[in-house]
Each structure stands twice: as C-alpha cells, then as structure tokens.
Image (tube, rainbow, N blue to C red; front, side):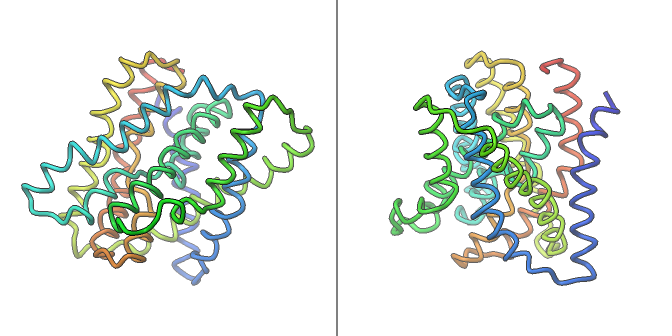
Length: 295
C-alpha cells in the first residue's frame, strides 16, 4: 500500500516541485500559461473524453450528483462556523467549496487508479468548474449575468462533447487521438503551474489558512460519506469521490478573489496553505481508499 501511495503522490509533487524550482530562479508568465491551458488544452481534453463513445456518461450521473452535494454542501455546513468566527463569507466560503479538481484532482486520480479513471476525473472537474463559474461567481457578484459567466471554452467543450456522446456519432480515431495528445499537455502543465503558484504563499494569515486546510477536506469527506451510501456507486467512482472530497482549495479561488478585490491576500493564504496541507491529507485518504479495495 505504501508503494501505491508513493507511486501516486511522488509524480504529483515532483512535477509541482519542478514548477516551484523553475519559478524560484525564473519569472515565467504563469498567467499566460494558465490562460493557454484553460482556453485550449483543458477544453480539448474535456471534449475528447466526453465525446469518446467508450465512456458511457450516463453511468456517471450519480457521481456528478455526489460531487454537486460535496461542493455546495461544504458551503452550507461551514456557514455556521464562518458566522461564529466572524469571517467574511465571500472570502472564506468559496475556497472551502471549490476544490483543486483540475491542477491536482485529474493528475492524482489518473496516477492513482489508471487511465480508466479519466472519465470520472473529467466529470468531477466539470461539475466543480460549472458550479464555480455560476454559483461561485454569483456569491461574489450577484449582478453579473449567468450567460456572461458561462461564456468559457470549457463550457462549450463540455456541451459539444456531451452532444457528440449522446448523439451516437463516432468521431474518427485519428481525431480523438489528436485531441487526446493535445489535451494530455494540460495535466503536467496544471501541476507545474501549481508549483509556481506555491511560491506565492502568504503566511501573514496563517491561522486562517490553517483553518481552511482542515475545514476544506473535512467538510468534503463528511458530505461524501452519506452520498456514497445513498448513491450505491461502483468501486472506481466511490474511490474517485473520496479523493475529490479531500482535495484542497482550487488555485482559481485566488485568481477570482484578485479579480473581484475580495481580500485576495487572505484567500491566497486559504488556498496555498490548504494545498500544502494536502501533503498530509491526500496520502491518508489514498491509504484508506487502497485499503478498502474500491479499485
């Protein structure tokens, strides 16, 4: 089991470490890389996985529902804690709800459970992203229209991929292979970018960051447990939902907070200390998942 955990976690943190090392001595245009990744490589991977007829997406409806409950439910159960501690709800709750399903989730699930976990990883990522760019942005700015929020390449790729999958149209093998090769660039690039971002850790609000590092995975795991019982998911999807629920806060929360001027320094502490905390949390969760024999 220890070998399984190490073989899963080491590539994740080694690639992120390469990003941190490179970013320490250079000043890469990480924002430009993220834009390229989110506007080209990630949508290509999403479309390729969703459009592939070998991925029966109707089998992932329960997983999508479970992920929705984990994301939205985290905000609900942590709301009383935020009020008691007199935290700014717009600062604290979004990073607790919207986890790192892209930069860490997709690579981690594929490394842990193999390529057969990629459709589940993509479904979880799409659920988190759509909720983040709809409900999440509504929390920060209720006046922005939903259509404007959803005008994103990943949304178009999701809709197009689902349309192809459910239409019964089979795309040529050479086209899917091309899309998969280009989309495959996004996984290591996500981890590399995460490593560069880790250099921006602000420890001035370390108490808030430590609270988030505990509350984010704890709330997700608390919600995942009853959903796994109720939904009766297959083993691979159960394992994927456990890992998804334990993921740290998404780096995107910081970028959004900066855009909306929603105490970005505090959000940076929440996000980046939460990701550092995953060094402890994720090996424990993976160990429990492997021990349970879900996959």
